[in-house]
Image (tube, rainbow over all chains, first blue to last red; front, top):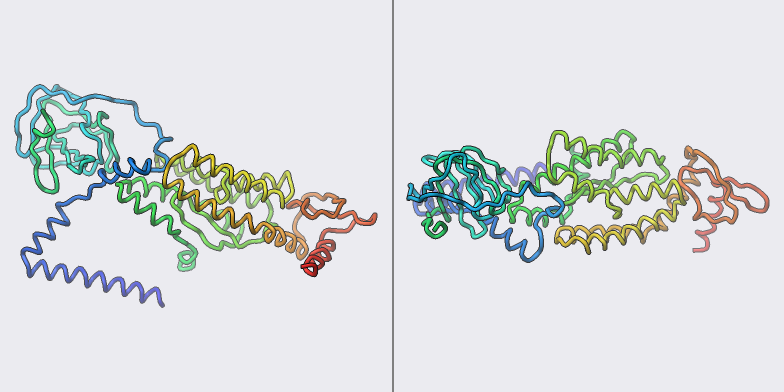
Length: 177
Length: 242
């Protein structure tokens, strides 16, 4: 009996909170914009907190030292030329080029985006999202931590790079010479 | 269903580790840990249900679960051994259809000889077979204390340190209660006849030499006295002395 009352209480409070938010969104435009910004555009800096944790407390996963890492692929990104493309940069590369990861971080998105083709988004340790666009194959898994220099996937002819921070675009010149 | 829910106990350490894992972006690893741990414990629980052992509660911890039994201490050794073996066996079976990097590390961690973990229970059962019941407590807990310190010297990790503090506190409380467990073991033997496999004669009235699943005869004044009669008189006397 007490369990049912507890469950009903929780149900009613959640309904109440969501109704208050919905009514406020209908009433106030500023609130709506702010709500959308906080919920849909800001992202939580998991990679930054992970790097801090690893610095002060050791590994964040108990058995990370025991597990053997995959065969080492240590490369730096090589490209022939660079030109602006929508929000970021378009790098011209060789056919079937194996793309290395520029900065280590957490893989937060794998999928297709408009104008960029197949995209992998990596949340870097400084809190900036890095988009790798126009990939043919992807070798990383969602929500895994990846090291800089390891294999991301393969791309042909063009690779798109975009840097974004909490909704705003960061000019690529900061990261690419 | 309701009954099972009330027997689950989520330890506060689980919430702390869950917070750490989620804030550092390791939610995937944490869910893998929980799936492996719960499946491991399911093996123990199923075997316990088959043998009709009375489960007191199931404590869920970040690096392994623990099933507490409210059961006679003189239950046959083979039943306890099968209940123990079913956990690691289920974890190996899980590896066939749920591939995870953390399956074998968790299995190896679970087989360490630290008290609430499975490895120490194997040592306890092994010592029950070759040695006496009372000394198997002392042997398992000395090995458990030593291995807790060795693990923390070789492996620097905050979560393992917190977990080993939990392991240390539980093993200290059980070790302090070893006389209670031993007297419970003796009382059960004096009240009920258990299926024993063989019998031995004890000469100098030392009850600490008594073994599990073995019938004892005490040699007193050129007479052989069966253990139930001896224990009844002995336990009454010890009560009067206290």
